[in-house]
Image (cartoon, rainbow, N blue to C red; front, side, top):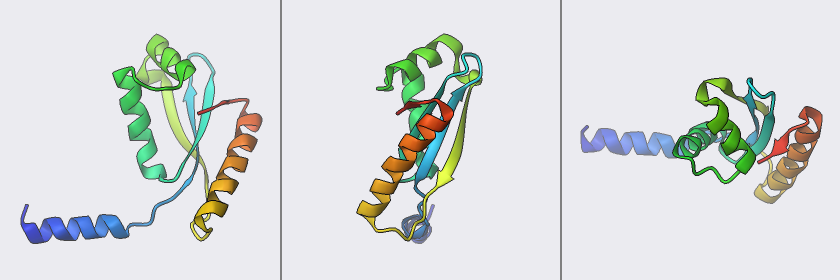
Length: 111
């Protein structure tokens, strides 16, 4: 890759629109659901799956269910995107509130 191409790719990456929001991880085999929030929804599934494959995920129930049933029984879904226009601290408060609401609604464990 040429230097100019690399610089253009880095610049485009930095200018991309980042979506924050709430996501759910489901295990079909056990019926369990976990919900979490992320300031960048485009990256969270890769991060979760990487730590789960490595056996280093900090959420014990999620990791143990992954170990017991395997990756093929898990799914990831974005359940709510938050308005990008909100100021950081307001968005964080809204995200916490929505996470609690989704956990209750889905009878899920918060991660």
